[in-house]
Image (cartoon, rainbow, N blue to C red; front, side, top):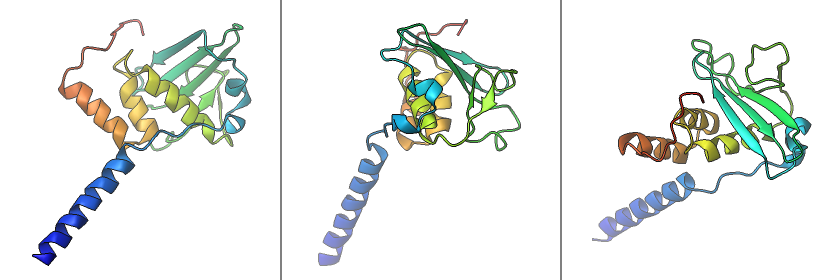
Length: 162
């Protein structure tokens, strides 16, 4: 009886720890560690546009602040080259192959900043949620993605011109 009670306690505690870890709050970026072209934008943002590229899933992000200053970023996902571009971010353009784009190095919280923008946009476009999952690698985002896919969540505002 005592062994069974201990085993049940261990299972309960394990489930509780896994649940708390899975649904822990998302991290917020330290704006001092976000690239200046993005951290200098004034909130609230006037407009945020996402471009989904058919090269395997790259996502372009254009942010316009309240003073009409615009910054562009790209999270590359070219088909067949996923490992080469893993965890890379490009700034200056909405696609990494454009002449104006350059690879970002040294600003650790920029990815968190962009991933949070993606996460907030997942309700607006069904292509963005898989990129959010790839960028964040959070189990909570996988659950959200699977829930929307299997329940055929119609809260998406699908737009062909996205």
